[in-house]
Length: 87
Image 1: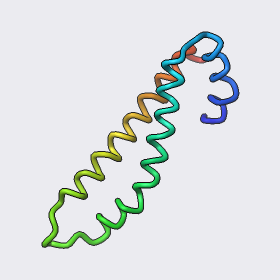
Image 2 (image 1 turned 90 degrees about the vertical axis):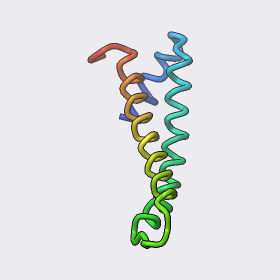
Image 3 (image 1 turned 60 degrees about the vertical axis):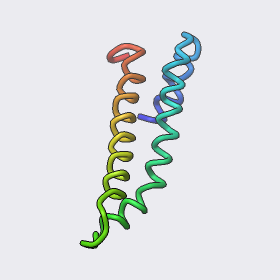
Image 4 (image 1 turned 120 degrees about the horizontal axis):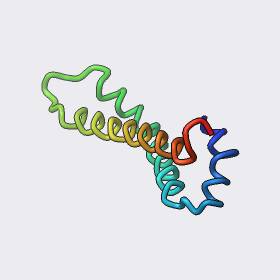
């Protein structure tokens, strides 16, 4: 999907002047890179939570990763559908 977007869809969006869609997609890529960088910290926090530590760090990391996943999902569908269904 990603390679298809970069090779086929992105030039058409540039020609049509849909710069906001391209900006959202680039932001999605940056958020995904941040999410991938946060995965080791997420794993460490959830591996063996201690009874004496607060759940604030786990809650924050889970919330950030959930936002990134939903942002990527919605932005990907929006960018995919902007050119029309099935085109």
